[in-house]
Length: 239
Image (tube, rainbow, N blue to C red):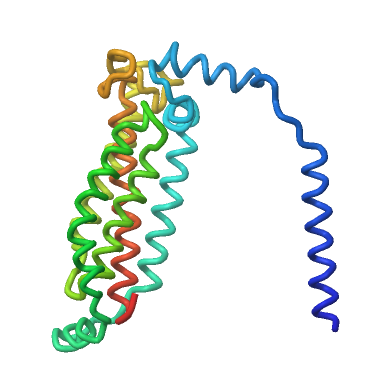
């Protein structure tokens, strides 16, 4: 009886909270001064149409660096917790054969779709300054293709050495791009992409160093998420 009473009170409380939010909600008729400056600066200063990318990569690039660092720490923590004991070659073979074989539809679909998924992920993070998307989204899309391969192919294994190298190199290069802004533009220009040419508006190679920075973020995020999937795959017989 007490359980149902608590559930009832929780539902009433959530309903009251959402009612307060809905009753006080008003559609903004104009942007606030900070948002207006971001929108103006994304075109005038950074030469890119996507104001969200301007905020994420440049204006609040230090926050993005922190988010990537948090993702790295989470990945390292998961890898540590899922670290398994070394098995003999025969035990590893038995674990691989114990996994459920993917259906023919799944395997055929994976062979056809995974290359397209990877290309789509690359397109998303290389065009993040021109259209919705970016490094985080593109990296997740690529990791979803890796997940499909793991589910479809019993013998598929991710090279952790390759993932660690790509993650480390992209992370170091990302920080290096930020330091380049400090060196070339001044002490207040960390992750400022304007040390490279702005290029032609709406062109792929435009907005300074933003396409390079977003590509590095996409590679780093995709490698980290794929590393998590690989750790889960190696830990147990079933994903």
